[in-house]
Length: 403
Image 1 (cartoon, rainbow, N blue to C red):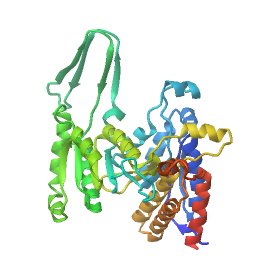
Image 2: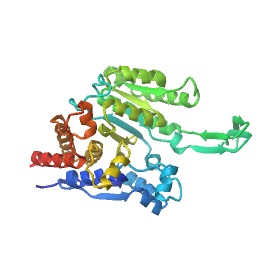
Image 3: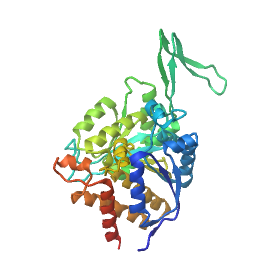
Image 4: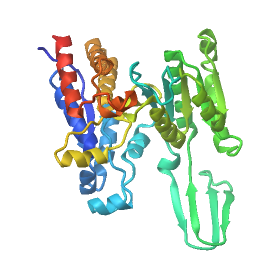
């Protein structure tokens, strides 16, 4: 069988634990036997991040920016317990945060809906695209443990030498903690533009959630910029009978629970982190969520697995036990990266391969072959297969479709 030729390289970032095992199974059985692609590989395992003092993460991010298309496996962001477990010299930052700060852009997360798999929120019959701003805020925050009584201030010193602006954050009468967040207008504009472009492409209304009643200047600036950028799209949205609306996040959460889906939810960085996980569970499983980071101009794309490293399943795997970890998010990370590589390179056969592989996997689930997380949603007696068996079945079905 002739392999599908990919003209330009893709940056591959390997991760940790069971997610890494799944990643290798998918790559070696569903991608490389069918696709001729040059992979620029980076090992983002916690052991290699320690070995390189995390330089490898920055190198991977810069390579992703250079080549335009990349994909990333789930990685460990260590806490104190994991620092002790791996003997780490320090608590390394989130690799996702480091990469997103280099690439900038917006993360779009969307469920894969399989009609025979029940949803925990049954009336979510259409997808919701959660668009998460991927710059600044908690992921580039400066935090401070305040040891005792004193003032914490927020100071802006203009570069032109004008008088500084100073605000007292809090007068501490004892120990505590403080946190400084920031964002920049250019990144917010890119976030807004990406959201409106995707909403228009998919035919979805766009809602931006905020807490402008409390953060009148911070969230208020987001609202102002979204309104400015929407003026570029208002005519096209009117012609497509679509709307844009900023909503308080309290109202947006209530709306999301009542609606049937079919909209784009634009979230600030941390809000998007939380809401995308909440939506994933409502649709059935984090293993059914796709995740895509896209630059405002659409010329730089990073796909990733939206779930964690599945440490409990990894312990089972280490004991030689079969695991029933859902590989669909891993498969879709590869397919979406290939699809966008084909889009940027102008190679429709690469795009078509990605579509065929996705359809093959969804058809397999609809025919009843699925991992335990999905089978349990149907019923306790519904049969399930191991992750490795699912990948083998998908590879056999894919081969029959491509011959």
